[in-house]
Amino acid sequence: MLIKNKFWPKRVPRTVTPPETPLWDNLAISAKRYPSKAALVFFGTTITYAELLQKAERLAAYLCRLGVKKGDRVVLNMQNCPQLIVAHWAILRANAVVVPVNPMNRAEELKHYITDPDAKVAITTGDLAAELALANHALAPDLRLNHLIVTQFTDAFDASVDGEDAPPAAWRDWLLTRHPLPSLDGVAVHGWCEAVACQDNPPELTVKPADLAILPYTSGTTGLPKGCMHTQASIMHNAIAANLWGNGSAEGVSLVVVPMFHITGMVSVMHSAIYIGATLILMPRWDRDLAGRLISRYQVTHWTNIPTMVIDLMGSPNFEKYDLNSLVHIGGGGAAMPQAVAQRLFDQFGLSYVEGYGLTETAAPSHSNPPDAPKQQCLGIAFMGVDARVIDPESLVEMPQGEAGEIIMHGPQIFSGYWKRPDATTAAFIDIEGKSFFRSGDLGRIDEDGYFFLTDRLKRMINASGFKVWPAEVEALMFRHPAIQEACIISTQDAYRGESVKAVVVLRATHKATTEQDIIDWCRDNMAVYKMPRLVQFVDALPKSGSGKVMWRLLQEAEKVAGDKI
Image (tube, rainbow, N blue to C red; front, side):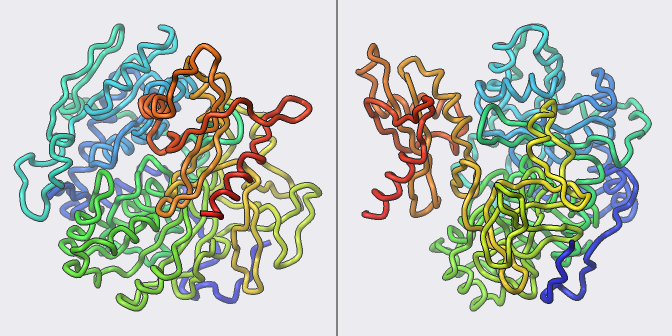
């Protein structure tokens, strides 16, 4: 049942009725209402809503020319930039499905994002194209992409920009370099400018609320990442709900630095802003002083982030120069905001940091703190339309208030299941009182006011600065190193990141000369940087149970004890 929380914001309905229209209509309607209004700002270059609509329609037509049909999956592999937003909406306009991919992934990881969704078309930036090409080349011919569309960052902004809008000096080579298009056997490679100049008519828009729209991937305790099937309706719900919760309006200005390949940046920031016609100020990655300048210059009103960004910005020697008084809503998730930092935000700017909680499977928030009554280091209350409970993970009986158990959720934003994984889908849901609840795998409790608090994890997962690292995935990649006989991934304490990744490794007898740094360097070349072990420990053997399973908890507990002594 929906908890009647006494701290529910009085201005916010407990449930919403999403429109029964495709997600594409949100952009089309905003462009009709606000054609001349700034939709996107990127290093001083503005794209209006009318221009965004036109670019997305032209790219959608080009995708259809390449053979993309209703329901086809299209890989989108980019850092935050206008082209990501254009491509995202173009894929939706082509009646296809967006497969957002973390741009930090390396070739070994990227192969899965091509083969598992059966993608034949991918869109990327010049700096990432070579890695995607390397992944594609390693696949069997019948599993490869047929088409690759490549854009350069300077397709979206003036390379000569200077002053407050200029990229940080350390980024200039990365952003300004125009990479040659890769050559791929059997794959047609297309330039971005050619694609968005297409004069064909886009196809008839035929998708319905129940049709698949987004296929983001999430990892887990075993195996390779799984695609989470989100429909037009599940994304639509949270795009609307996020606006109501955060006082969104067409006059809003959002700083977009959380990545839009991730469900939070995609839904709670991009989709929600475009639904109401707000302005998005884009950052391709984090830089504290650029963030400070942009908030000040564009009078940013809404900023979704992870707590380490706020900590970093407030630690800048230039912090006193920045004007944060325009902010009316600041919050995020992925990691707890330290109480002292939250208090400083409130004392200096009157801002309450609003922490929330959600998963890829829940289209971002399933819980959020009421902006008018947040509790620090708390998941918040169940979000609009969500029935959230705490159960005993073994007996599945609901736990009394205050006692810890597994958090489960039922609501309109919950995903439809895992792509091509009916076994995993079945395991992820339980039926209670005739309703299907998603099992989060997180342990928590509910306090006397109806607020949820995270207490532990059922799932084996490491939280490094808000990035979820799944040990089974890292271990599977590490086993490809010729020197590694066995590997176990655990977390280690990190003063800044909260947790970091540590690998406990048994070397093959033939490779005893391998060093810890050799392993770290190989991992940096073969996996996303946030997944790679920062520490490597060699051991003669891993502890194992009578059935031969690695007893990772023993290693984790030993690491915790060692960390507590420091």
